[in-house]
Amino acid sequence: MGVILLWGNQEETIVKFKQTLTATAVAAGLVAGAATTSHADTFNFRIASGHAPQTGYVVMMSQQFIPRFKAKLEGMGHSANFNEAYGGSIVKVAETLEGVQDGIVDLGGYCFCFEPSNLFLNVYPLWMPFDSQTADLGVKVARKIYDDVPHMGGVFEDKYNQKLLGLIGFDNYGLYTTFAWDTVDQLKGRKLSGAGPNLPWVESLGAIPVGTTLPDVYPSLQTGVYDGVILFPSVGWSHKLFEPAPNYTIVGFGAKTFHGITINKDVWNDLPPDVQKAMNEAAREMENFAGPWVDELEATNLGRMVQNGANIRKVSDEARLNWAKALADFPNERAKEADSKGLPGSEVVRMAVDVHEQMGHKWPVRYEIK
Image (tube, rainbow, N blue to C red; front, side):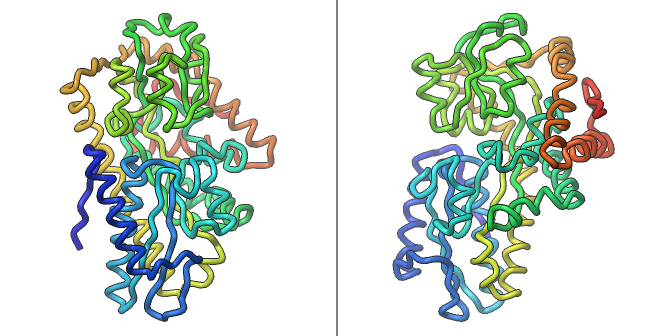
């Protein structure tokens, strides 16, 4: 089954999104309830995210996971309808975990970074600046850790009434700024924003950290709420961040894997085993597809931004090394904080350091977990 991927043209993506909603509503007979098995071969789901439909992981949900799952069901004589609700129309960015937990939606996609208390250890990649330089590697490392450490996937089921179906990688973090800069000393005193757990990356240099969420970034850069943001090329292009912040620096903070799709546990338990198997397979196929796709798109989006007036430069090796040295203790500090909460923090971070190296990654500064 062919899958069409839309990314760069926001209007086309939104049109597709609206058409999907309309078609789904008609096919489902305007079903508004939870996933149902009232007809043995038809399954209706509500799937949602707080981010807009052109955001990378939402694209993977809508244009990889859903079509793959539907195709598998069709091959089994079943069918599925999805009511897709993105852009915060049902659940906001920091509400998706709770939305799935409470059955407001059946499936949700979200960044674990916006659940820093509930999913404290699942944001471990943000404790490890300068890790995976490709999304493909980032996903593979994360999958190894999730498979080997029961807490990583188990926390969703044990505490939040949902099952983690698949992980989704993102491209390599860099820094968008409204001002040009040459040395890291010039970042001191500047207001720089991030999702929260990654703010120490810039705070270590004397910048003023400002927490934010993606929907707020463009207007905040435009109005001077802050002077820059830690983000990646995919979002910079899809959300046009290069307009208010035309200076993008390739820092190599790492391509992190801390997004995923989950399904309400009650809904999951009501599904027949063959449908569960199909959903698991579709999610894992999406996970494996996402890494290489994101990496290819990163290069494309960097080129698109240059063509549209962005100034793109790469931080020097010396500056990157000094930056890494300034953050050398950060992973160990976060690991110990996780340990103090009764979580396997040191185990996970130590494993991440080792698995990266086993898969060919070279750390600018090798993190020591004591």
